[in-house]
Length: 117
Ligand SMILES: [Cu+2]
Image (tube, rainbow, N blue to C red):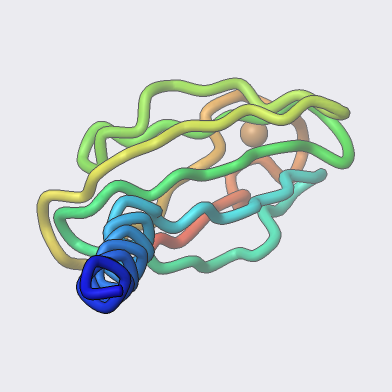
């Protein structure tokens, strides 16, 4: 009886602690769809000093993303495929990331703005 009265609160605390730990580990995953010639959404935000995962796909054309400043390696975005890339911003600011693959007439204007705060 005593064991039950002590064990239950301990278990409850453990379950709550585990739930918080799981939440702390989970980091933002943002879906970004590339197309001719834009990223949707065109602007996202990422927390400073914490990992963010981009889940990238294309609804038309082959595109790419890369940012040395943000630590995003050159990543090809293919239609019908999902590619994940995780980066951890080291400095706050607004970063304008251009499509990294020559994709046609609108390529120069194809940008993804990442706000780090
Ligand atoms: Cu392009």
